[in-house]
Length: 89
Image (cartoon, rainbow, N blue to C red; front, top):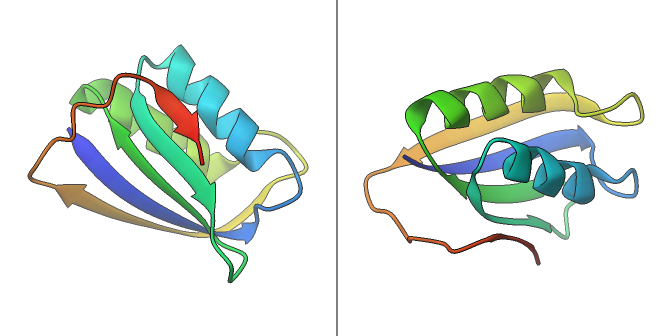
C-alpha cells in the first residue's frame, strides 16, 4: 500500500520528521518525509495495509507532546515506488 500524506499543525521545529522516521521503522514502512515551505510536512509511505493504517492512526494522535496535529490529508496511490528505506528529505 502506498500512501501520500500532508500534515498541518505544529509539525516543524519539534522533531516531527525524526519521530515519523522512527515510527515508520517500527512499523516496517518505507518512503520519505520532508518539510514544506508553508509549514506543513509531506510524507509518502509504503507497507502492508495493517501497518500503514496503524501508522496513520498514531500520526493523527501526534508522535509526542511537542507535536500538534491540526489536519491530516491522506491519499492512497495505486502505484508503488518500491522504496528501500525511510528517508528524511
